[in-house]
Image 1 (cartoon, helix red, strand yellow):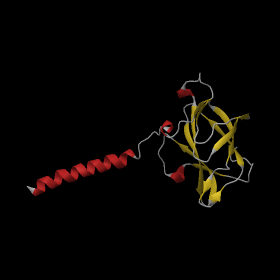
Image 2 (cartoon, one colour):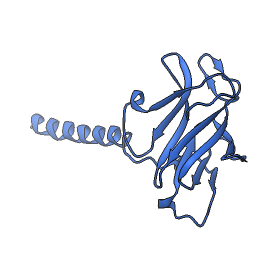
Image 3 (cartoon, one colour):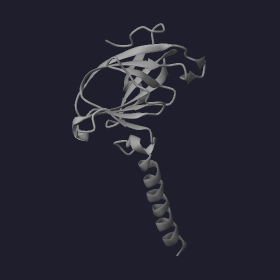
Image 4 (cartoon, helix red, strand yellow):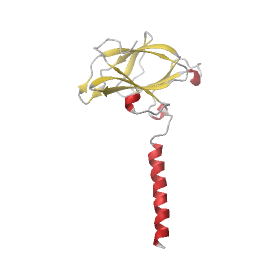
Length: 157
């Protein structure tokens, strides 16, 4: 009788553990769950034709394609596709080795439907920008990483 009770109990525990741990890895990510700071560059552009970008904590844009913007921190923005140039304010980007001072440009050709998060990241001892797809699960080391050069220099062209 005891053996019959143990098996179902362990099966239930295993199923619950799989559900709990499996839910941590569900994709795609819905960035709207992480912020209320949402901006639409062109509200007439359908979402599926837009580019969705989430700026991680400490990383904010001060200009988009030469136009000054004030989206604030942890911003989720919806933009038209195409070549995009951001000036990023990095003054609030903190790492384990301190705070990065300055700004940098970031240039990327986004396609309609792209969904990315931009994070300040440290890889191989260098601080830089991590371009993380919210639709594709990868190891952190597989995402595109662009080390920050000297303040005011371009990250990627």
